[in-house]
Image 1 (cartoon, one colour):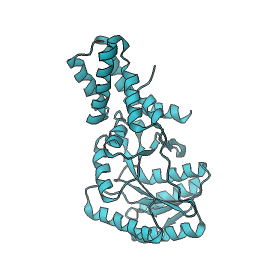
Image 2 (cartoon, rainbow, N blue to C red):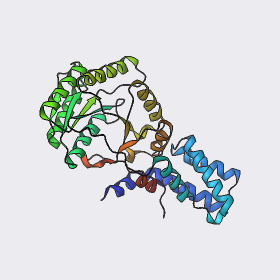
Image 3 (cartoon, rainbow, N blue to C red):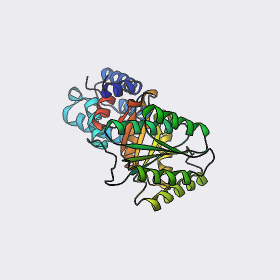
Image 4 (cartoon, rainbow, N blue to C red):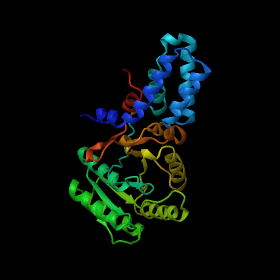
Amino acid sequence: MGFFDRLKTGLQKTQTKLVHEIKRIITFSPKLTSGNIEELETILLGADLGVPMTQQIMAAVRKSYETQGGQGLDFFAIGRKEIERELGDAISPLKRVVGQPTVISVVGVNGTGKTTTTAKLAHWMKTQNHSPMLAACDTFRAAAIEQLKIWGDRIQVPVIAGAYGADPSSVAHDAVSASLARNVDYLLIDTAGRLHTKSNLMKELQKLHRVIGKQLQGAPHETLLIIDATTGMNALNQAREFHKAVPLTGLVVTKIDGTSKGGMVVAIQKELGLPIKFIGVGEQPDDLQPFDPKQFAAALFPSD
């Protein structure tokens, strides 16, 4: 099964709910009335597309209805087009700093699958003929260090780790030194999961970034926020607060296959203007792939 098919399968819960409800309304009443406009808005909001994106789609629907009438109204084509317009039509690649390791800091709240996703990113890099290294900087959870080491063995990627309870900044410092010595392409730093509302933990993350920034100019070159799609619009609050504390460069959305609220991907990018770099649709290493906006829009609003 290709990744687009896996994406469609992953978005099945979101898509089924959208398609079924929209078809029910449009079939029952092809005319666009205030009543069914309100129903359509409720359905889009229920998929967590957010108020601005919902308004944008509905404005385009009204415009189409005014010019073509109910018979020419293709709600799904309009929705697909507006999401493509919002997300852009190109994959947003990871940065690559030539001649030195590109450092990627992976951040997020507890329970988003951050450690697993960090390892899957390293696996993807290997498939692109890059040499990655992993840094176990989640020293608050002994299990996280062990988990990353197991993943490192599984995907054959070196892991730099310290002792449980060690200073995360110190481990990150050692990892940058090791990445320079071994001349790897990417260093992925798995940071501790932290609630976006805890300022002391956010300050610790800022310290880690300062330490590696002194060691290697521009580091971290990417700061990726891991978002669990099943949290819906709460993920927007997480993204907002993390972005204030440490400027984010992109998002990685996981567990898209476990939710009927896949529209939150669009809502977050629309509000914060942050590109979605990768999307996860399963448990296997290759179930994390670069985010393709056109494929996502087509999976969300199918043409048939």
